[in-house]
Length: 98
Image 1: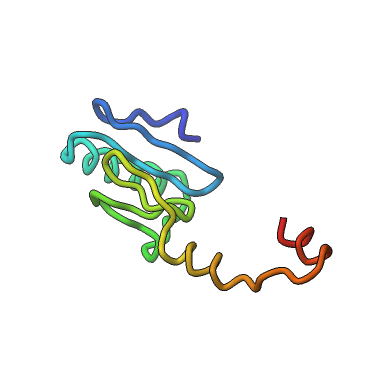
Image 2: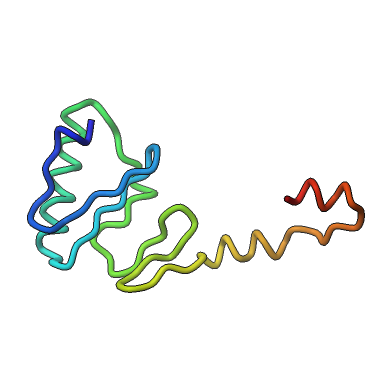
């Protein structure tokens, strides 16, 4: 479906299943592309979660990572989830963890 959509200027759209990331250097191009994409998806009968929408921000959470200009790191929520995993006590526990 996204093959039918053309982003503005140097803006790129990354899709992983139903998660989209729109990025670019020019904030106006990103904003314009975002609005056009939301309208395009609406015309195709698709809905976007307002709760998950992060509209034109310098840092966003995408697939459990914080992504900003020049960096990518695990989000605090994901780190907390990893730390909360109990330490394995048996070989079987280790296999489950892996």
